[in-house]
Image 1 (tube, rainbow over the protein chains, first blue to last red):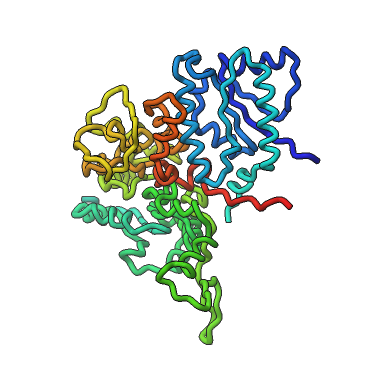
Image 2: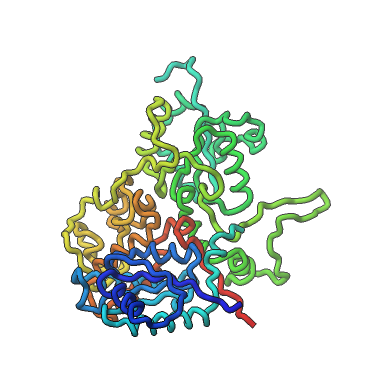
Length: 141
Length: 331
């Protein structure tokens, strides 16, 4: 059976979730590997969310927010960007492939872009193969 | 002074994978030690008393009233003693950062047993080991079989091995906090619910830190402590030095800050933050003063060792508690 990745996607309420909604209402077909979690702002995404997702078996984590300058709360997406850069550096040191996480800006009108992003990310994770993080964390030897 | 006829509290102190600093912090009660021995009998304390493991094994279950377990669980001997002391003790306290969160030995979770053994017994510049001898857990000599504890692949905090009643954090815990907790037990004061962190505040270190702080912190460049002239009074973070204060419990008496060193996080995360490093990354994300991706990357690049900085004392209890081994390439 082909490996179908589990990707946890955190989408901000104002732009990205609406963008994903647009992809749906426009009946665009895209990979079903995303598990979307709506948050009020990408600035709400604590690094804990991402680590927890991996701990519980996610193969990848996608974070989407409004384009720079468009944040509903002015600068939440910038905070997200800065945290994301720290997280990238950290997970690299922890032996996790940096390609398993991705940050993208999706506006409310970019339904097509979202669908493409979902497919792209799914392909990236398929190439990486299933995550062994959960299994490794559970193993006490 | 307590009444001499009153049955004394039976107390044990044990060290797992630790440096011995926790035991010294117990000795730091100084003359108060007389008050302690007036109300408590030390029934087991390898650093100070010649009581063997078999003596502990001979004790009835629940015989010991209070055990302070310091040090992490690194090998099968630590694990055996953790289980044994859990069985023999009414109250088991994870004493100090290593027992609480894994501590400094926990940073070994960035590597594994094989890598460690190779480095230590084969590769170090000062090693002469042409036969490639590596310690074994069992070895037969003419006198009989020798046995060594088994070295684990990863370091564990105490509660990853046995149930722990209380956690007394710190590297080492501040002696005043120990006395407060000890006296509370002796005086049969109402103890907090099981699993509580005792001897530390609910709020973060920043709350008690006396350095000058402004509300809107901004950082344009991170420095390592030796790269700047600390002015001695401004918040370390505002000077660009990473200080774990925002992600660390208070209660230590800001000893490091008083010594003009930034907090390293030995008291562990406050109650509402399950993962101290995540909390710190979140806080730092807020104060980096740039919105440009390239600039942010440059600023973040100055943090050379994120794990060692954000999880110095807590890696085994972090959500991602050890370094992932590289997956085998698929054929």
